[in-house]
Amino acid sequence: MNNWSDRGVVEQWHKLFNGTALTQKFAKGEVIDEHLVAQLKHQIAIYRSRLSDISWFMRCLNEPIARQANLEDNCTGHFWEGRFKSQALLDEAAVLACMAYVELNPIRAKMACTPEQSDFTSLKLRVTAALKGQQPSKLLAFIGNEREHQAKGIAFSLKDYLELVDETGRVIRNDKRGAISSNAEKILSRLNIPAASWVKITTEFGQLFHGPVETLQELSSYCEHLDKRRRHFSNSCQYMQVN
Image (cartoon, rainbow, N blue to C red):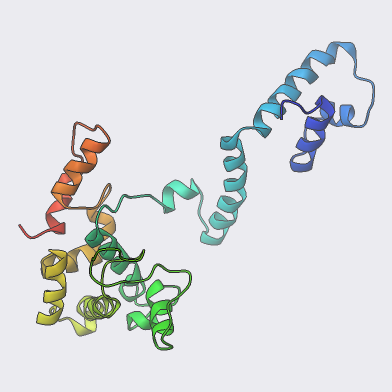
């Protein structure tokens, strides 16, 4: 970018933005009044800096997406901060709990009656593929219990995961309130999560966790690794393990 001529910088900027009347005049090759030359050079320096700034690139990329999304949702305000967040899922149980919470969103919203009927979920893709004896290419595979020289994937059984999500979906539906079965409790015992905590996690994940998701031991290791002196959100850890 620093090797570009002033005219090259202005022309590139004008491909993306309108520029100013002064830079438009410069791009056309018109004579610039002497008292405006310093102003023009300052403007070109700003353009050069922004064209090589990744933060400016992300801002320009995000803005039209945010405007379109706000228009669709009939609202205003920051797009990414208000709708998305990033959390560290530090163990297999945290990953599976978060996955189940997302899979069951359509059930809680009464948009679907069963998890496998929920559109736009990974579970539906997995069920559809499993019926054909296949694995969705876009999703990480379930590879069963941990073992030596295991392939890359989720160290859990797909059958157990589908059964767990199905039973949880039945429990959280208002018209089919029930309890986690003994077989599902055995599955949860391998994750070291009590059945009552599992139901709470998969219905209130967003309210319970505002930071890393894991057991207290994992949180301690995580904070130590990042050289953090305080363990924020430690109260939520109680739901991720048998006390």
